[in-house]
Structures are given as structure tokens and as C-alpha cells.
Amino acid sequence: MSSISFRRPVHLDRDRVWAGLLHKAADPTSYISAITGCTVLEREPGALVREIVVNGSIRHRERAVFHAPDRIVFHQLTDSSLDTIVNTIEEEDGVLYLRLTITGTPGRLAEMHDYFAHTLEEIVTALHAGAGAPT
Image (cartoon, rainbow, N blue to C red; front, top):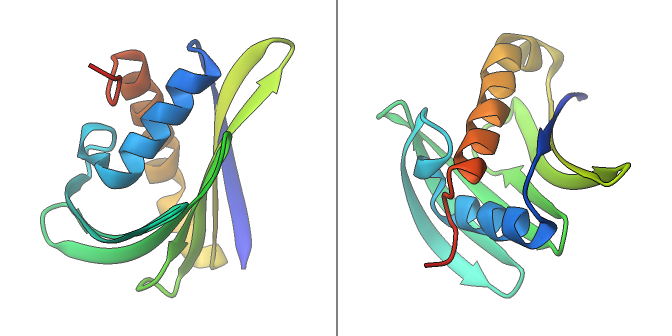
């Protein structure tokens, strides 16, 4: 397995970013345009299992494990070419960043490189727009 990683600044406080990432785990459709549906199949303390629908027809199951307050690991349960997708909140010189790290087969990562780079941009844009913010 190989990995690729992308990082973007997030101009929000850590609690707000973490709340958004937790919301994204349960309902990613407001964050990632290619994900057109999501059903949470199981919930337990610190984790959930979900089935996502990509582009209206492709289904994948993932187990999201929450490592509060800065990391969620999505273990891929049905896509053998991807292993994990990790969302990490990082801080450097007082600036928060969101990092997306994907582990999978080299061929699959090369094929999905632009998709995941775009996905991170969509997530950061949605966080800044208030997706998942408490009402």
C-alpha cells in the first residue's frame, strides 16, 4: 500500500472544525459533491459504520473511528484498492490545517489523486460556509 496526502488551511477554531468533521462522518453529502447518499448502519462510542453512495450508484461501506479532538480514520470495508482515508486537524504557527491522507494501492491512488485533492477543497469550503455548525 502507498499513501497520498493533501493539506489546506482552515480559518476556524479547532472545536468548530472538529464538530464539522464529526458531522461529515455521519452526513457527508453537504461536504463532498460526489457523495450523493449516506446511511449510518451502526453507531458505537467513538465510531460508526456507514454506507455511502458515490455518484448516485456506487456503494461503499466505511468504519469511521474518532480520535478526538483531531483525527477521524475511515477504514474502507468494501473497496480493496483503498485502505484508509484519514482526516486530521493540524496546527502550525497558530494556523489550523486540515490534512487528508489516503492509503491504498499505487494504481488506485494515481487514478484518484485529482478527486481527493478536489475533495479536500470541497470539505474546507463547506466548513467555512458553516456546514455542520450547531444551530
